[in-house]
Image (cartoon, rainbow, N blue to C red):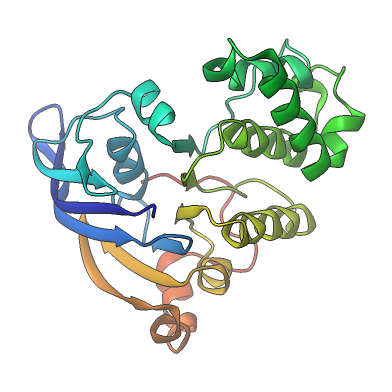
Length: 248
């Protein structure tokens, strides 16, 4: 069972800028939990805090009932939580295969497991197999995102945190990425997805949280939000293509 529970989380920048204000949410096992809201709502800050990049001022984060608040990212990766941030994180001067080997660092003492894990990524993402010897900087934006997603899967995570997976991508490529994320859910991975593209987030998610100014304004099954999709898109700039750049 892989669940995340965030309880009464408060996060500040520079000790006086409150970004998250008593935020609570739950990401159930093998479901996609969507996080939507305007720029500056605290969406990315939430994921960075869960993953240990930021330490909360108050509140707790639980993974399968265990308190993981403030644990560093490498501890969380070993426990089964992986993070795909919004910004590109490929090693541009390394090949696709070398990037994947870097992602398999936790398995470095088990060469056969590393080989099997990377071979599995090539089966999931055939384009990466075709370009395994190419430097990551030569890949298209969509291919780089596939490489990041594939790298995150190498350690067989139970939970995957994904921040703005299709920002800056063409609509056709973005659709491929969303299909891949839906496949992750079918394989049993628990996903917490931050997305500025409201329509696609609502299509993918099982349950949705709407953030504003660091608090949860509304939450519920996606059907509740589908009824007001047009209003949400108008308010939060989440059209069919989404913004070129988003933060929060």
